[in-house]
Image (cartoon, rainbow, N blue to C red; front, side, top):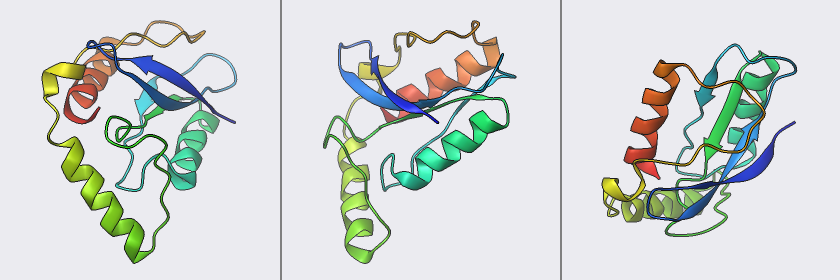
Length: 126
């Protein structure tokens, strides 16, 4: 249902995000936070389910700065790799990515509450 698009942060870094759009006008927008396993099949399925319920759903690949294309499973080795990536991402300054460009989606402007939530997410995790 969804597809990957690119988002650009305030410092010019480009990161992918999986986006699923509902049929018709969205009820609202949701940001799906990845686990330590990246934007894997589970996170993409969750994002698609939100879209099926009428929401515009976006799952940014928050490990992209330290390792592009993270898509881990759930084995012990995957958990170890995920924790290492989480630690590495935490070293990046929040200011580098607090403001992101709006993706080129064909949807109405987001409500103020959604803008605030996505700004907090972007600053804390991208």
